[in-house]
Structure formats: C-alpha cells, structure tokens
Length: 299
Ligand code: 13P
Image (cartoon, rainbow, N blue to C red; front, side, top):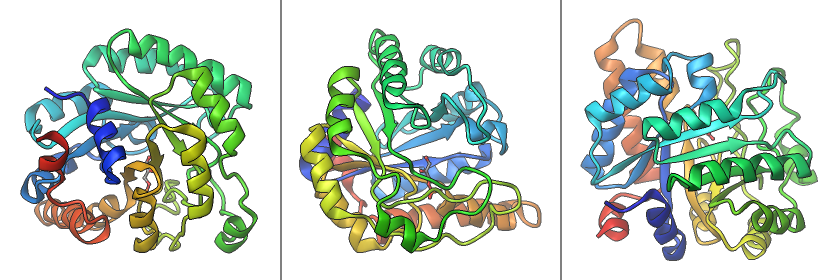
C-alpha cells in the first residue's frame, strides 16, 4: 500500500493537492468517505485535538475505530491534525503523549503544531516528534507562522491582516525550520484563516480569504517540501487553484462540511448526513477541482 508521504509527494510534483477533511462529529465520517469514493478523489480523514475536546469526535481511538469501519484505502488515509503544544486557550498540552498514542493506534500521518512557540522551541519540539514518528514510518506535518481563527475573540479585520502580512511565515525561518527538523510537510501562513470554533461563533460565515501567491512562491523556493494550506474553507477559488501550482499539496477543510451538518444534526440526522456528503462533493468537484485524483496519485 502506498504511504501518505509518497502520495502527498506525488501531488506536490504534479501541482495537485490532497484534501483533508476534519471530522468533529463521528457520523460525518461515512458520508465524507463516500463522497471521496464517488468522485474518485484521494483524501485524508482528519481529526484535530480541539475536535475531541470541543466538539464530539470522542477521542483519537474512537475516530480510528470509525475509520476502520468505513475506510476505503483506494481513496483514503487517516491523519491526525493539529496537536498543539500551546492550545487555542493558551494552555500547555502533553502533545508527545497524544502523538505517541496516535502513532500506536495506526494514524498514517500526524501534525504537531508548535506555531505559538518561539522559533527555536518550535524547532526543538518538531524535531522530537519527527524522530518519534519517523521511527515508525509515519510522516509529520508542522506549522510555522500564524494561521489565525481558532483563538477566542474577534480576528483583526481581514484586509488589515492580509495587507500587513502579519503572522505570514518568514521564508528564511522556513528554510532553517525544514533543515533542522526534517519535517515532511509544512503548514504555512499566507493569507488563509481558520473557521471560528468558539461555541458563540462557530456558526458564522467565514470571510472570503485570499492567498499571497508571491509570498507562497518564496516559501516554496525556501523549503522544497510539500506545503499545507489550513483554513481551506472559503478561500477565493482562483487563489486555491494557483496555490496548488506553488507547492500547496495538502488542503485542510473543516468549516465547509461542519456547518451544514450542525445546521441539521438535531432536527434531522439523516438529512444532516446527506448535507455532509453534498458539501464534501462540492468541495472536491467545484471548489478544489480534485475529482479523479486517486488514479493520478495512486495509479
Ligand atoms: P476551515 O475550517 O477553514 O476549513 O479550516 C480547516 C483547517 O485548517 C483544519 O486544520
């Protein structure tokens, strides 16, 4: 079976991307897998720590068990998204324990998010996780720069954020980070923002984000490894498609499939599952134009 590392590498070299879909509620997983199969798109099933802490995905083990039940390895692999070292509430997390457990459980790639740490600490933490995961053949994603949105409280106005480039990943730091950590994929900040996750704001529509393609080109040259786009919901389409030509080989999608589910989950659970299926299909076919990639990437 092809590893996720190899599949993402192929996507990177072909100017394509692997979408990753977050699962904040366990029942969402089956319709996401079905949408990937029906569109013949290769994608990742993902869970982030905040989705078992603040939503209803249960635990890394519960997600793994549901994955074993519904997976289709012609189209899917399992990824552990955001395990922060300092979380969105500014609390320290026992990240290594969670990541070790995930590797033991059979997650096929993992992310450690040290982006709230100073550079040297982010490097040290990421290097430690890379050593642990690579010993078991598991690729690692890390983050450098600030993809905002998960924190409580209002975001600065988007235009201000974008024009100032505040929090954008620094290319010289990225070169050093990749060299000193041996990380496989790097999540970069180039204009995207995460969907809000606080209970009060999680239903809100996201701003339409853009990407600084010039900045992305610099990061591509500075790193030479697959780049990851977080905050994949609601970015103007032309930027996402251009981003894939500039090194973005993995795109994380959460809000676009979570909000349609949440809108219906209590009133009509069956309709909620159908809404997830349709939203996932729409992302694959219309927003990302990635239908049919399984053949290209795994064939
Ligand atoms: P969105 O909620 O904007 O789709 O972002 C998802 C994400 O980046 C998860 O890591």
